[in-house]
Length: 304
Image (cartoon, rainbow, N blue to C red; front, side):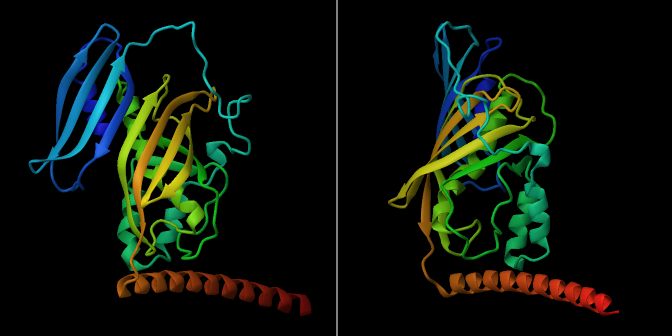
């Protein structure tokens, strides 16, 4: 999605014009092992707005479609910008990113105790160009096969790890890339399902829309506020808002619908669930053993 938006931006030949919205559909599963061609068409060039259509083509088939719109920044007397809590600019209870647990820390811990089948996914997440920190406390243990039910909302600090070139529209393209990955996972939280989980049969984006409201730097921290008001009929609907931490202002909004289905009860899924439960039990036993050893040593010292 980010690459498609950047490709569309390259066909806009008017200075200072930036993306204001995109609407995209994921039509077929893509492969990371084959090249993707982004075919752009100029659907309109008006006085105030340009529109572009983008087809992502892989192995001769269209796997993704996007319609994007661009405009020049302009001053307006009709203006208001919603802040995250309406007053101070940030939701209450949000800790500054430098004081938050990072996903890198969590993944490092998982590497030492996850089943072997999960290690490639963990390595892939560790190599992500997106840095993530948990804005309202550490998440529940992803290896717990039976996590507690949680509200269908999550708050994350997100940014691109490495500094990016300040080319026109590149921050928006990076934000589009950032916005996709965690949004649909919000819908799993009320249903006691972690990601990844053998309980999960299908999780995939169907369509994703995004609106850009103001300037921001994608390689600086943004607060990503996500909620999922609906899940049913094998789908989930999620909304997200990105806020600048220095002003608390809303700079981008997005909406996503995705496939969300439970796995069918097969022997393979049951075995995977058993392996996750075994890994969790082993971790608890190790923690208990360490606590017992430490307690025993303290007791002996007190007797002496």
